[in-house]
Figure 1 (cartoon, rainbow, N blue to C red):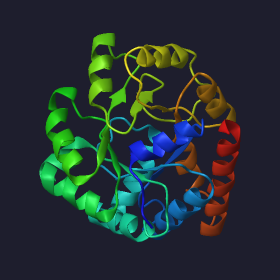
Figure 2: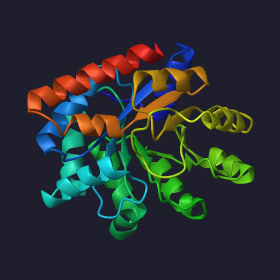
Figure 3: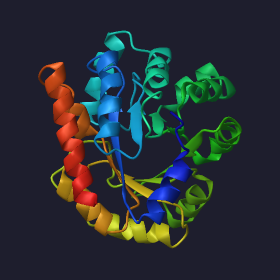
Length: 266
């Protein structure tokens, strides 16, 4: 199955006046087989793109739920090569572009060119590197463009306006707007300043904007869409649902949850 680029996906969604749903799961938790099945379930349940976290020992941007999932996966020996094998297998019957969430040190350790070439060959279409300094982004962005991977940059609530404009110029595919100061995790509400942050970004770019961190309920997703987001990114809530019950129950749970989020933003 041919998977389109992030940019093409967002172009189609904009033409249809639809907001994208981007679920996040941690690869290898509870196991790699469940990860592969979860990618297929989320794709069938309405995910427009899927973000897949590579387990890392020092995940600075991740809250307790995703940190714990990454730790469990690492303890089972899950590594990047295992994650990419899952992507390669699943991408044969998953139409949603897969975005890899990976920290910068492992990329540098493997080598930028080698890393990007390997993930592109596996079928990865996008890359989020939460600790990538803007000043070092050029080297990654240039090679990524050559191999057909789009690097999505993040804007935080504390990012100065001047820097927001620079990030918006360089980000590929879409811009990832972090809705809270701090780490990922479920929260009871979406902070109202997200509306202002979206307007700030809109004043400097026409690129699609996805909002993530802290979105865990259908009403959160609906609110963010109403404020003008092009995509809603939901992580910890999906990761939590993949840790409880038996494998069929977990997959049924994320199927229902994904469909409820999708209905909220249709």
